[in-house]
Length: 353
Image (tube, rainbow, N blue to C red; front, side):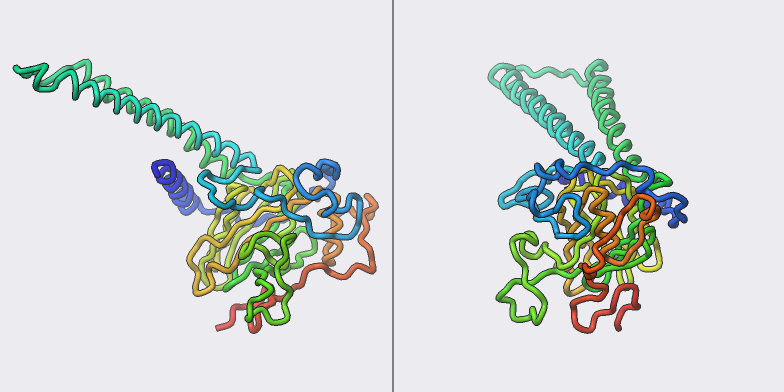
């Protein structure tokens, strides 16, 4: 409970920090990330996902199968999820460091309490001491806790600062838009197309209609979606978060990322996934009746496969002709630009009253 409380404090400080300093608006990009960054080897995907789920070197896009226990909650889990970003790994180390600090303080206080109980009990001290002050002890119990708090504050503030570093100039811009109650993902650096992501329902759900049902290759129940947010792995991303109607929150625990989407405001943070894989999250701001049914799925692909996916959506890649990047012309767009929820507004459209 103490650890959870500390993380709430850190999260609150981070949110307050963002509200004070604000977030910069999106800047026009002068150079494509494909000309700056090397593509990951598709063979490296084998140890993080089903190697048959992503076809190496293919221009087509096949959704990656998730790896059990990676990027998702597990039954009976009591720790925070393993992290797959640099900030997450730093925070995970701080988390365990603080556990040892708390354990050491608790053991010391318990030992001191037991010593006082037995050493200064009435039977051993029929005439109690009347000492009222001890300068050395008072200095120690003031200075030592202050030093401990300082030691905790330094990495805590460092973590907050890391989370709000300005994305590099060549970062790929992706925008997440919260709707009631689904997500839209726009790719302004790749032709400004937008897709819509809805939660997949179960086979026996009477409200499913004509939408396809969830399968095990989509992910856990109530976390799987029809259209994922696809990103390149191992490269910096300028992730912008906003909302079309009410406040939503884009949160992926295994990537140590959480940012509110506020209507009329564009919040921005650097976002990077270290390994190819599928990572699950949820809206983390109470946004209405179906708040619990707008999950987030991030699929990180090697750069060459990300480029192929972009072209398959009808998007563009700067320098694609020079690098010989092509999409299969017979391949239809693999993700739909409209919500599967009847009556919901399409991507980029105004909310329905």
